[in-house]
Structure formats: C-alpha cells, structure tokens
Amino acid sequence: MNSEEKMSNRKPFEGDLLSKTISKDELKKSEEFKAMVRQYQQLKPILPASFVTNVTSKLYGMTVAEYQKLDGYDDINYHIIVDQAINNNYMIDFRPGGYVLKVLNSKDSQNTSLIEAMNLVLDHLRKKSFPVQAFVSNINGEMWSSETVVTELGTKSKYIVSMLTYLEGKTMTSKQINPSSLYNIGIHAGLLQNALENFDNDYLSKRENQWDLLQLPRLVKFLPALEHQKEFQLLKTIMTDFKTDVVPALKHLKQVLIHGDLNDGNIIVKEVMERENIPKEKTTCDIVGIIDFLDMQYSYNIVDVAILIAHMSAECTCMDPIDVGGHILAGYMTIKELTHNEKDILRLLICSRLAQLVILNEFTLLIDPHKKSVRLYLENYKRVIWKFWKTSKTELYRRWDVVLRDYNIEDVFTIL
Image (cartoon, rainbow, N blue to C red; front, side):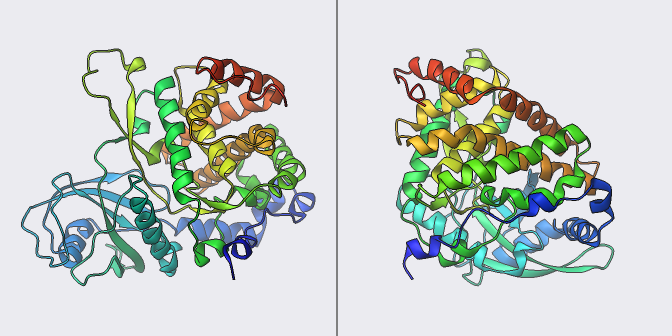
C-alpha cells in the first residue's frame, strides 16, 4: 500500500449526525453522554507525590534536584533538573538545562504505536534540521516504559512514561505577542510543513483523534456542555457549513502529516539578544522549536495554518484579532504559497477550529469546573469566534491584504 492509498483513510466526516441531534436535556440524560463523562474523568494520569523522584531514579538512573509541573491538557509533563552523576549507560550526554518527564493519559497509554510514531517523527525532523526534542533512553535502552502507578488511595493504573530533552526557552504563552513574533511563527509553520511533507506512517494514517479538525461534525455529541443556546446554534451552524463548504474543497488538496495543535503553548521561543531595554510590545522572539506532536495526523497544510491563526488570534492582545492572520501569513508565504482552494476555505477553517476549542473546553469544565486556566482560554475562544463569524470573508481577506502589503506582498486575497 503506497502513501497515497494510506492517506485515503483520513477523510472528513460525512455522516448525518448533525441532522439527528436532539435537545440538550435529552442528550445530557443519555447513557452515551454519561459514559463520555466517565471516560474523560479518568483520562488524565493520577500520580502520587513521590512519583517524579522515584520513577526518574528507577527508569533513568537520575537523582532529581528540582522539578516543576508543566501545562498539559490530557498528559502530565514535568521539567526536571537532575544531578550530574547519572547511572545510565545509554545516556549520551548530560543536559544542565534539564529534561521533560512525560506521562501519557490513560487512553494513549493503552497503545505504544502513538509514542513510537512520535519518536519516528522527531527523528525525521531532526534529520531535516528542524529543532525538536529527542527521546532519552532509559537504563534498559528503551525510549519509553509502561508503568503501573499506585495512588495514595490505592487505585492502580498503567501509564506510558518517557523522557525527552528540554528545549531551553519559554512557551509563546509567556511572551508578549507582536507582529514580528507572528511573522516568525508563520515562517516556522511553513518550514515544519516542508520538513514533514514526505513522512509516512501506517499507524498515523488510520488514527482517530478527537482533535482531528476533519472530524468536527462528530463533536455534535459534546454540544450539551455549552452553557448558552446562542452558542449552541452558532457552533452547529459552523459544523454544517464545514460539511457543505469545506469538505468538497479538501478533495482538491494533497493530504500530508500535520502537527495538529500549533498553539502558543507548543511554540518555544527566546527573546532576541541585546534588546532587553525596549518595550515588551516591541520585543522580537526567535523560535527555538515546536513541541508536543501527540495530536499529529494526516490532514491538510491549510488546516494547520488555520489552527495556528485561530490560537494566536485568541491570545494576541496587541492588535485586533482579525489582523493577526495577516502577519502569520506574511511569514508563512515566504516559505509556501497558498492555493485558491486553500484561501477560499481558510476563514471557515479558523471558525471551525475555534468551534472545536469551545466545545471541548466546555466539556472539560463540565467534568472539572475548577480548571481556571481552561476557563480563561475558553473566554478568549468565545470572544474571538464571534469576532470571526461576524466578519465576512470579504472583509477579513481585505484586512489581511492591507497587512500583507506592509510586507511587500500584494493582492493575495483580492481576486477571491
């Protein structure tokens, strides 16, 4: 089976779930909905307080000097600093900046194929000179291990545990976003797509993932999590338009492997040296690398562009969110051109990603109302989705063309 035949398995959802939706009250009472709640309540690893020091010593022959929990959605990650004396014959070098200890969620821990695919992708990207993390071998020479974890309450669960090198820098979340940074992010998005263009993996070609934007209409089952009827109708409309307007256009595009979650939390940056005394809103950030490839899937390059623009538009405070995409595209288009079909569906793809984010984050809060960070993100997504939806495609693209002209890029969207 060649790569084109494999990729044909990854098709946008074309079923009729949208026409079969029932009321929110009926869905909330359904056994299917209750089962989903139970499943996602048990998804994120539950770890004892001694886990980090014990497993790092047991699996990697390292003594933890200090550690810090990193942001994570379904998985748990720790930035650990270790003593230089390491009892591990498979360790090639010592990293004073530390490592990342990763514990996969209960669902992904049931199958090693995902972590194996991630290792292959990272190795492929390093060979292409794209800056990414690398897996660290444990004392058995393995890149990961399945560990039984016993909590303080006595419950037992199995999780896949791995360690990666730490990319020194900060996530874009912690930095002031400005036009120069957005431009640089766009460049790296294009470079990443070029580096992934010919990668082929059988498991990823068949993988089902709730964050796959091609499967957006399936998320209709999560709509009961929405608080307001007005948002319920908006998101259902976006799902319907996705099926009628986006899906036919995708048939004219080439499927490739994409990152699948290009957001500010997965972009590692550092400030340009010798600019410490300038205002924060003018500070330029260089991209150190991209992290978290666990949502990678076969899709379309324009989908990754839309995901990136959606997230950065929601997080940027230095300009109108509608203009953010223009700066990202200015950098991106130094590496790759947009086709007519890609340009035609980009606005709706951005709205579709924002709809996906609203639905799944609402569902997360339904399960755990105390997640303050999720609530803050959700407020931004809701604000920006209405902004994009109320801005016509003609007006959005006109404004992007104005931004692009500042980079000497003329009339990209005018002809649409």
